[in-house]
Length: 359
Image 1: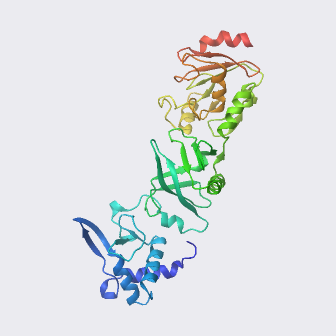
Image 2: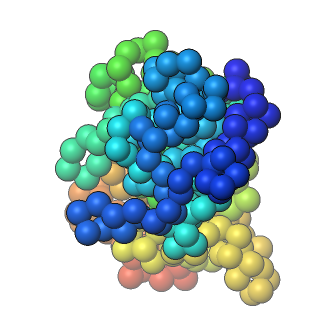
Image 3: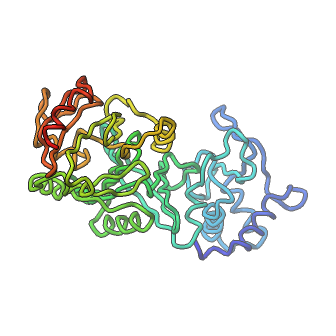
């Protein structure tokens, strides 16, 4: 909404909000079906005021002017369900919102008022069905805002794109999948109306800090053809990508949860490690930990870390490839080949003889 003359709109808004004795509009508490709406005004009466005061020459022009006030986020519909209309609908100035009704985050209108903002409708995959949402992404911002509609004053969700990995999801037409470093946050699947729109949003997400991830087909191909763990990487506890090539030449025990060797955090298993990485690292530093620690990951399911998909494909457990609990362990030889898998109840010291045999 860069074309709005903000100064002109704010001037009209000031005159509109003046008391009736000073030529302003009638603003008061109003009732509809026994429900009270605080300090609001009527859309059709506002059009009358625009015409009487020379701000519009027709009711259509008055509606456009009222919509400009709404687009500038100076006014809004009392329950954020309507654009500006020439009807007996109630609107309120933002500054008149009661404290308990004040929006907790930026509104659609305030976000769209910036130049270069990307916004539009999308379908978000819910637990049982797809839901219509409205998403907004400002330039130079790493937060994706999701709203129920394009009229709402408060985002229903906010997604940190710098902590996200984005990829095309070929399981659904025109779909994008975003996964997050914090696995307490659910994956986000967004569906669009065309492939052109999907690619446009993909580029916008990448520009805002989301990392580009491998497509599912690429991961499956990598896992199928891999000869060792050295072909994989993982993020360390500070968020840096680490190639497992750095461990070539030494037997490598690794585990989920916590332990005395290379440690890969997992809250995927009944939220056993709910804290964020900085808290985990601070706790470990307090004990003088020296072994390598990695960021939390998924170890089961479609979006498990490719490394763990590979490990599980090479060594089955009592429940097949499924990792049933934290402290599950894999032992790899000097060449990065998985050679043995251990149940969660096997203590690290109990595998010492197997490690010594590979030295």
